[in-house]
Length: 239
Image (cartoon, rainbow, N blue to C red):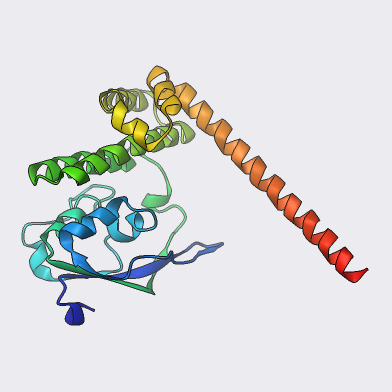
């Protein structure tokens, strides 16, 4: 693909494998685009993980002249991939599933610690980069997604019972950030959740738990309904 497209980066599709299940590859874009256009995929459904991770890609080594993966950081690809894409003239994408992304239980990415909050730092650095390079639309997209990231990380901090002092420190940072960007955040998700968060991250977490449980109950109800419907259809067909 690099040869046929004269590309600087070649990206292939991937699937995820867990010890107890298989997650098939998603439907993704196929074709060649400029590096700047490829940056838009960082914020597209089905494409964000596919494009952001370091794996499942071939890079021309010249792209790494001024780029290095940061030492000691979680989400180190988040700190670098956008820079590599911006430096590339052409990025080619294949929809072929050619990479197995194994998800090991107990790995750094499958457990939560303060290091996982480096994800928030990724958004801060990206936004500065986009601003410095006059990429206004990407800067706005990053701002919206950062607000969603704040809420996701907050839920995880409570779920995993993070040290109270550490959690308090980060919640102060997150609340100030969300307060400053409430208009952009509300475009991406319901205003109610955002204002509840600003009043109390603890109550926001409780609301998320309730929503999670209701969703689980609804899915179970739908599964039971589908099974009952299938039984009736089978019995009716045999009458």
